[in-house]
Length: 93
Image (cartoon, rainbow, N blue to C red):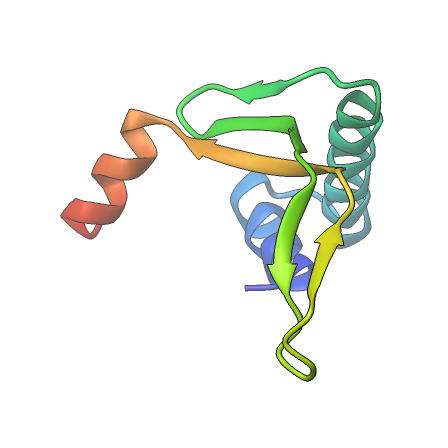
C-alpha cells in the first residue's frame, strides 16, 4: 500500500477531500521526521514506536578481495510494533 492508497482510505472513511487526506499524511510524516531528527522517539498508541538508534563501528570482510574493512558508525531508525499491532497481524485481522 502506498501513500496515495492510504489517503484514498482516509478520504473515504472520514468523508473529507482527497487533497486534505493527502495533506494530512504529508504533515504526519513531516512531524515524525522532525522529531526523529531531534533524537526524540515517536510513540503512536496501538501502533508502535519509532526510535533513532546508533549503530556502532563494524568490521566486515570485503567479498571481492577478502580484506577487512570497517563500516562507520551511523544513526538508523527502528520501529518497535505495539502488542496490539502484533496481535492483529498474528490473528489476521
